[in-house]
Image 1 (cartoon, one colour):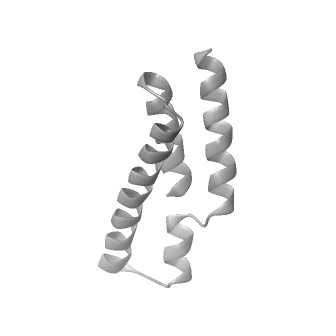
Image 2 (cartoon, rainbow, N blue to C red; image 1 turned 180 degrees about the vertical axis):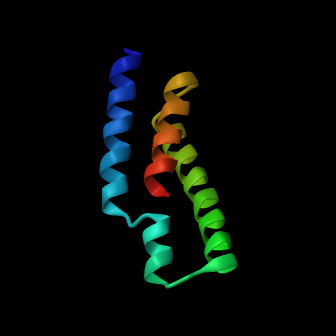
Amino acid sequence: MRTIILALALTFAATTAHAQATCSAEADTKKLAGAAKSSFLKKCETDAKAACDKKAADQKLSGAAKNSFTTKCVKDAV
């Protein structure tokens, strides 16, 4: 059962990530460099983690499934 939930969560994360621009791509589009880019990427990663945690909670994931989902979701967003 957990394997099925994890597979669905990872599939959802992958499709969501492809629909959005990544943080680094957005920073390049905005032509940020140096401290401004570092600050932007840090804030973007923090926002992505919060959004991924909320998605995991909405899907009622817990334990290893939640950690895996959140890690993959943040990695895809950044």
